[in-house]
Amino acid sequence: MLNGSVDLAADIDRVVVIDDYSLARGGATGLALLSARLLRQRGIAVSYLCGDDGDNTALGATGVEIHALGGRDLLNAGKLTALTNGFHNKAAARMIADWIKAHDTPRTAYHVHGWSKILSPAVFQALDPVAERTLVHAHDFFNACPNGAFYDYQDRQVCERQPLGLDCLTTACDKRSYTHKLWRSARGFNLFQQLRSREKFARIVLLHEAMENFFLRAGYAPNRLITLRNPTTPFRAQRVAAEQNREFFFIGRLDEEKGVQDAAEAARLAGLPLTIIGDGPLRETLAKDPSIRMLGWLDQAQIGAAIGSARALIMPSRYPEPFGMVALEAAASGLPVILSKTAFLGDELQRLVRASLVTCAILRKSRGR
Figure 1 (cartoon, rainbow, N blue to C red):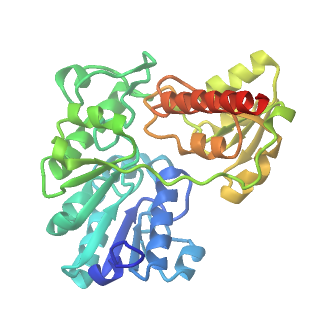
Figure 2: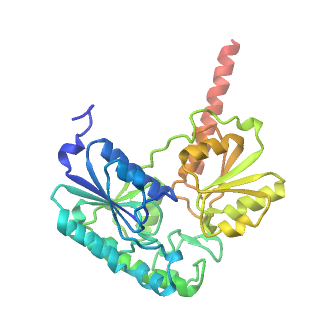
Figure 3: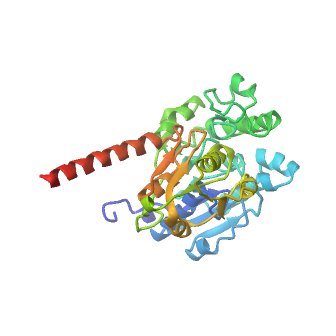
């Protein structure tokens, strides 16, 4: 035991972290990298298997062994490559299978974070021999919904259908086309065969308790689901003097379901400045608006410096946002946060604000006495 906790280094030979990327461009990879670094700090050997070029010298400097596929995500690959590799990436399966054959021990643990952009459901086929020692982290809904969001992009409504049921399959809900929806559905059937139908992959880690009902609807057994919320730290140690500012911020992936276009339109109608931090498919479109300040992707320290001029953070997600870590990071930095009703953290932050207001009122009253 170490400080009352389990000595993981004595019980585990190595942890293999698996993710599409080796550089953070979103919360999933950010947490994958954080877990790798923290495990190394505990003295645990870590191997990081990724789909990209593995060009993360900072991670390698911590002693993490990086094994890279050298692939490209589906948006940047050719159509035929994206079609085939997105469904089943043979090279990814081979990389993971070869690593297991050469290095696995009975005390090696495996932790899958992201697979939908490069690695594909093939990772679960490769991990089948070690499924009992594999943890699958659900940072989004791709393990349960073919379009990854439980969101109908055509009707702009949260989807209530059973994933891959008849109603789902006959509904054109994809952001691109019905043909793309059918391809994603075929990939979803492949995923369910590799992951959902193999209960040897016992633990699916959810970011928020509200995700559970969506995974149950997709056919996962309740005993396979466990909730473990993301660790959160403020963007900066010093509180942002938001009351003195007028600039609004959006931080996150620049995609339709994130509602970044709604943030831009609201800022335009209100006549207020908007700064966007992040990257994604809508970046070029948003950059054409001269009233928006585009900062691209920034790391934690850079975001902390940038938000000194912020009045509030806007998180206008259109889909059931599983966690939205930036909302907590911004709130902990002193920023008001404007969330959509579909964000799972919305009600919680609202309750926290009410509790804080009540506490402040009680303190003011007691001091007045």
